[in-house]
Amino acid sequence: MPSQLEHAMETLMFTFHKYAGDKNHLGKEDLRALMEKEFPGFLENQRDPMALDKIMKDLDQCRDGKVGFQGFFSLLAGLTIACNDYFVVHMKQKGRK
Image 1 (cartoon, rainbow, N blue to C red):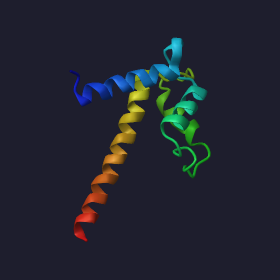
Image 2: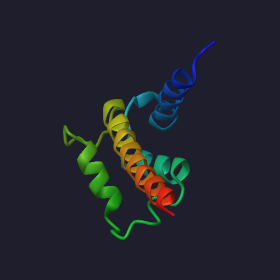
Image 3: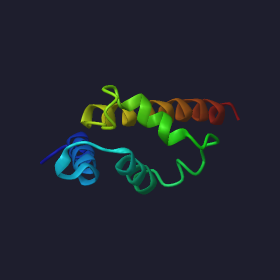
Image 4: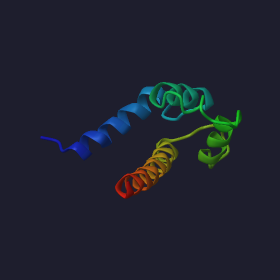
């Protein structure tokens, strides 16, 4: 029976391929659809209207308008680290009360 972490890995892979399709990469509109569906409110809550363009630029290391699985995973890692940092601070503040 797969562990929770193995299920999480499978979900990451399936989610990437759901939006990448047969082309095996995400274009800007694929990335937009993924962010809007899988991270509802993320783009809406950005103060910078160019947030998606900046994310795409950061992830598109080859400058070919494509984000592969590694770039997708880097995005998720960065978001997860930011969420963890927030969680740790929040838990420390909660403990002080």
